[in-house]
Image 1 (cartoon, rainbow, N blue to C red):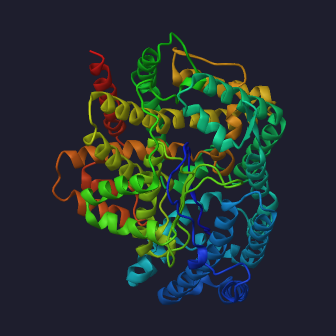
Image 2 (image 1 turned 90 degrees about the vertical axis):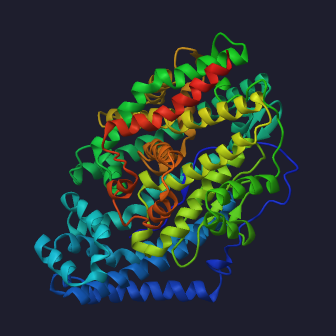
Image 3 (image 1 turned 120 degrees about the vertical axis):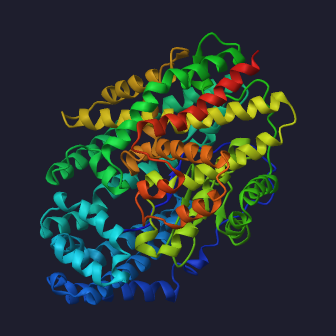
Length: 605
């Protein structure tokens, strides 16, 4: 059962007088929690799941091509209705995660859907037992069925890792009190944490935001506040990570997964060696990227040694100008329209029809995401907009996801879902268009320098930091396989990747060793993080092709987004003359970041 998940993204930041910030209108999903439409859909789902199992269980192998197509289409419709219900419940919850009624409503919906869909567990198991030749024959005689081949390929990639029908049903039933429950505990704990900075109690989001303040004392105070609260709760976070890593290890062992990363690679439809090539290229580039850039930044800040609270510090010459919502919207929409008016047309209803929830509010989930919901509806974007230039880039990024999800929806529910490695394509591209637009409008060298430096920092956060995160997760899961990890064990693993990735100019204050605790990706989506680096490298390579002036670039680009999950990354990149399995491909992307750092060094004279 595929339920749509939000594509969570990392940071958001700070300011006031932002204008009229939009809020979600969720009525396109359901009018309310007690709406008759919601009851109708829940009742339909219960009946349809039972009837689907009665009609098809034990009989998939007997179906002809038309019969199998009908089964797939019925399954797809179940996916749509279940996804619609969970999208509505989930988005309401993310708006105020501290509201116990919203949390209960989401948990109740999840329980009901888990119960209703348990009879469907047979479907993928039985489908994977179909003989290859038999299935190939059916696909050859029915073009409508053949359209779904990429979905079948992804399902059948799990064939060697499938358990008995009974065990699969048990895992399905047990999921709500397994990882889903630990995920919820983590989310609710994080939303409720308070951090005291200069006598003021702040949320996690507001405290992290202080790390981008001009005032160094404020950044340091925020870091110490974060460290104190993380340390006070470290046993709980350690328990969450130990349990989830152990649960994963047990399931992976039963499924005969060769590595903890294999499941993620399979779901991303990407080969382990491609990810390894990416990881190795980035780690080899640490000295040319992060080490070199942070040495420059230390010089700008007038420091011999940087501290962790200086990593995201604004530059001394940076203005603390607040960008109001209207200006942010105008900047992003102009950049999109100049690339192609069609892109701005797709983005427009996000602003006009309640598809964005932008304001920071008590209890709201931190960070930013784009949630695809389901293909008959539309995506929703969540931001915590506080008016910094970086927030404009976050808007451009999430809107890129939204445009991608709207275009991919043409594929229908099962084929629209883009693997994580490609899910970042339109978001990072949208960000790059917006950045180039802002760079073009720079009033002087100083403004240009600040824009370039901010872009380099964002790219380092996306590529270097996320690959360091990936290495941390690899080490964490390998160590957990040997036994229970103490908080000190996890802290040591975290510090080992931080020093390597950030470089010799950094000192690490006491308490920073606990900062693994707040990263949601480690909890929600193990090994998700490399997708950011994959997406950034892929887009940098794509952007180089665009700059080289390929006359058909726009048409090819929209085709790529429309494809959703219907094609492998090899097929999608081929029209641009690119191949992600070639190690040189990653160097092409990293070279763009290096080029920006070269330009910054040259500006130093």
